Length: 124
Image (cartoon, rainbow, N blue to C red; front, side, top):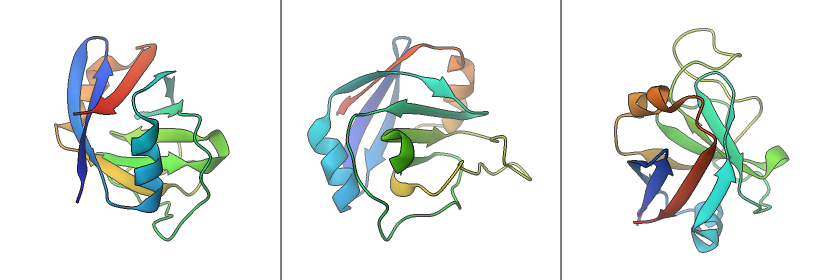
């Protein structure tokens, strides 16, 4: 069963959920996580200090609102719009990510938070 999470950026809270996968469960066990935010187009990614290989959810086909785990950076990626590799409005990650969750709140909320420095993810 998916587990609800709270994403906190600049005192704004955004609700999401982590799926019932092995990768997502390992991330859930590491919560709460606080990290510096990196931006790549309309994608926030940030190191979570959890090392997990690609799994059967690994893909480069993500949608706006998806949350992926990116093994090369030991990072979570939250997709909320176009990235530098996009050919249309859909985001395209730099390389494959494990799909671990999705935003429940409107992903457009993240566009107003670009330039933020810190992110915190915790269980709801």
